[in-house]
Image (cartoon, rainbow, N blue to C red):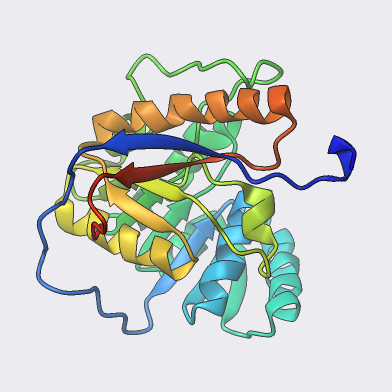
Length: 253
């Protein structure tokens, strides 16, 4: 069979001897939290929204255009057969939610932060943006601050708990809700409890997630995104990802 007819799932393995994080005292309980996906009309944002909608969460799609957000929300509701989704302009979407996910292109990142800064005070923000600079997206190009995650934390201030994650996940695989996901997610942030909230949400979309340290460490996954783009292109893979494996039989994240 020719490579053009194959669908190849490839995983970059990261070996570890032992890396069991401390328990924070039980699983996160969900009480109908509302998640705003800013950039929810794009490939990654819409895919995450559909997965969380299927998992039973309330979703608010954010876009620079409210009309575009409303149309996207209607399409997603029809796609997955769920109705707990609405669309708004970015600022209002962030205001309505308890958890805000940023899934915007790097070129629109700073503008988006300025738009939502007043709406996210005291909230959890999950940052997925990577500093890709077309056309050379297969070359890592981190910001001077070190990572987009650190830039976001600095700009939004200490009242906002920024967690950086979901950099190396295939948007096309996420967007196919019938596709069984295979891969792990590294989760960064300065607050352990906030990282755990993000980990539980990531589990809800069918992926395993791991505590990976402070927001400064997110530079590793942001750069890895360009590495995965290169690997996918060079070897003809479809959505290569990463996976943490250990000599231990089972480690809980």
